Image 1 (cartoon, rainbow, N blue to C red):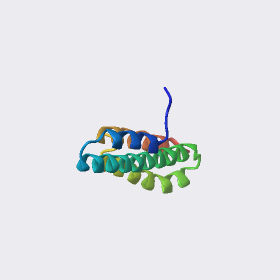
Image 2 (image 1 turned 135 degrees about the vertical axis):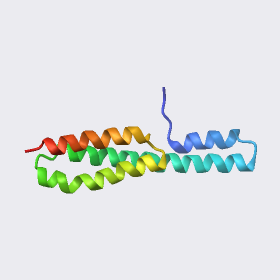
Image 3 (image 1 turned 180 degrees about the vertical axis):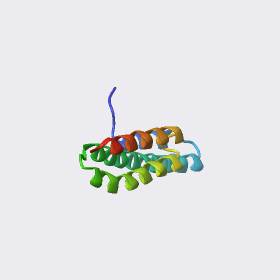
Image 4 (image 1 turned 90 degrees about the horizontal axis):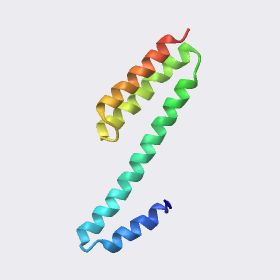
Length: 99
């Protein structure tokens, strides 16, 4: 499947929309989608960086910020609250296992 830039997809949807409100909704959805992708990717990068840390002190200082990011994703509805809980649990186990 060919993946087109977001602007191309947005343009196609705007052409299909028949009402002013529908066109606005398409624009808003595109903004939200981009914003949600950014927050999700940033959080995944933070989780990845936390997993690489081998010192318990450094990981202990970093985990509250990462857990906050995960909670915000769940609050915004980007991920499910149970997924957020599972992620936080796994990260806590990993940090507590460090020597």
